[in-house]
Length: 349
Image (cartoon, rainbow, N blue to C red; front, top):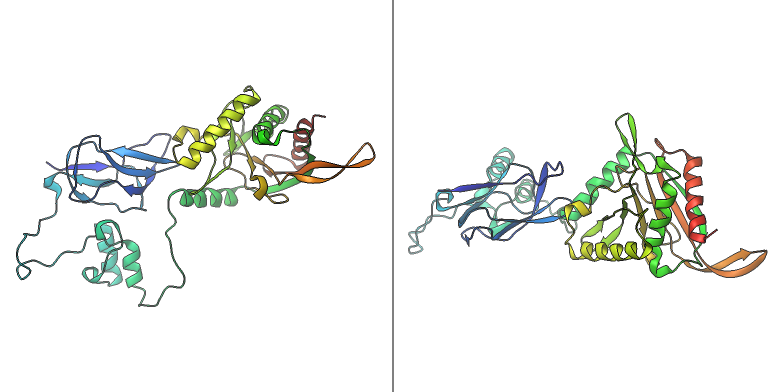
């Protein structure tokens, strides 16, 4: 009996997922609970096989985004395509091109002979790109092409939505970081922001339709660069956690982000975001608001620069603080007051 395995409901309101990587191939024998496929949502989730048997058909190729409930794979001999009998070369039937019904329909619409194509997908499967490439009249494509997949696809979607929906303004000011232990820069900034947000609740909010929702928790996103792209894990309760606890949690989340082992709930529910790229940060940045938040604070490169203290020029460790905010929710004067209050806490004044 064939078993049709569908993309399951992964919770948290997710309605679709990307097939990031198949861990089996057609013809493989799989055991129940054996790792079957990796699905990319906000993070990568490994899904085990719900049944034992032979992998008869893989219906969704790697890199495709499909809605919950889509049949991904058929397990069991009943779902297999008719087998080609092993015989001498003269007696072998021509091998039928591997392609999903959707790809076959596209080939028919574009007038492409799908049997003449060489597939570039898993197990030689014909992909949509193969068909569209063949339909392009044979003109060579310029440059090397890579599909937008995985974390990079999610980043593109998220940034596009933020840019489309949020009218951003960026405020920038210099700060003296001489009194800050730069090894604890991010947790120190998290603490300063969380304490200041209590005085400026409109920056710890979100716009929901015609309502501004003021949040009474201080769960801060931290931007972490990984080999796959930028991810934003969430540090919880930044207002009540100690600096040491924040430092430990920041280190743990950053390590998990780079290893690709973050859990979905570690990437959701932030109320405000902090970003700092250290030596790569540049003079200052104009960061993009992490939708649906209404503000994000970034720290530019901190370096030795001349500062004036009590009328004298001295050498201090200074950098620029940049605050991008959603002007629908936050007024410019309030954003500036918030930024200055954060700087006063960082400078210990």
